Amino acid sequence: MMFAIVDADSDGALSLAEVQDFHGRIFNSIDENGDGSVEMEEIESFFHGSDDKSDE
Image (cartoon, rainbow, N blue to C red):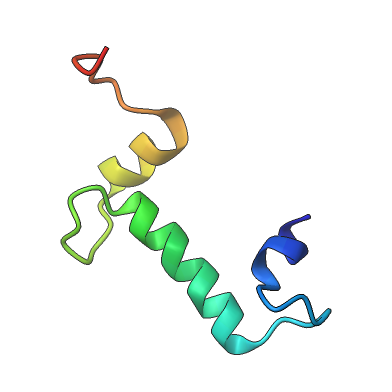
């Protein structure tokens, strides 16, 4: 299933560009403050969810 998600052009092979794009999307999802770097707190928040319940 992951292969199909990364294989954007559905040609049955992963190009370097497809893999880099996929990694970039993951990185951007984790980089909560958008500063171009990922801190441990952002990784923990990504995998465990935010402890901040003020949005609810």
